[in-house]
Image (cartoon, rainbow, N blue to C red; front, side, top):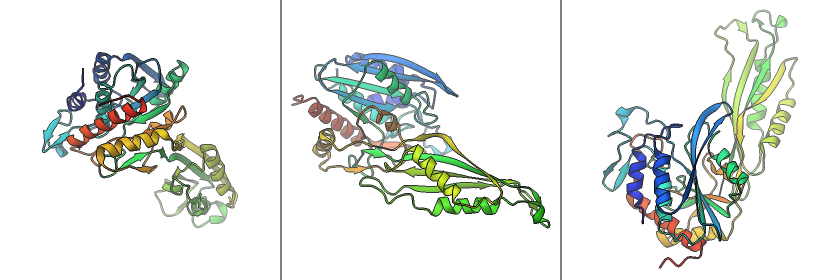
Length: 384
């Protein structure tokens, strides 16, 4: 049995799986995977202040090398339906393009990989799939807990692929071998409120807050590394909550985000922030700093024979070798990287999260061919 990637993708798009509602996607994938020899386990994780999430783990084969594919079936909300040419959850094919929410991000990657698996002999080696329905929102009860469950139950891998859109302009022109981390924080400065005409009876926190802002935003973090650009800190908001012009406020806060390379960890960044704060004269104000949320760690998969093999497969299908990128935001690959080498390889994604999200059908066929060619070489299987 060989699975048609377009047919599978259309059926996945028809499931309105806005996070965290799986809307039948995981059941659909489970049936398709079981039909081509996979053992499928459905897992629900919950707690830690987030909503319950359904996840899927599938495995086929018991020997040889192990390849993990990871992805997500959840999608962002469609937004204003008036901006869509047609129903976002009714797949539409026009001019060689397939439209629908999740077409690019990233039901296409899932469909292409499942279709490619159907062409690989069951005796080739061990293939695993880790599919979550919680990548676009909290990402608390999804991939992080799924790969932890895998490790706890003896499911290890030699190499992992994530099917996120990784191509920049044309299919296969770029793969992501790492991602920057994300670190957010809040600084609060408390002084003494008072009348602007009697500043000696107050203690204005804003000059101190402004000095801290300057120290944070003008001090260079680093010069970048071989595969990463320089880390950057951006102040995202400054809040005082003072509606009048004749009152010295009692407190002010600033929020910031740092996108950082492999020079740093969340712990060393926190220490760096504290050092910048300590360099400023607090002038009697109370200054506090808190990390916001759970930082995303940066990761870099070491260049290896498997990455060369993937690059060879891409060149075979597209005629050019991919660039190696670490750009963009965060992805669930950051969780997988804690257990083994991982690379993101998927379609072109300029329409993702937009109205009329779409992909070129030829790209879907090409991505399926890339996955199939790579697996043939990864497992040393004659695909002729």
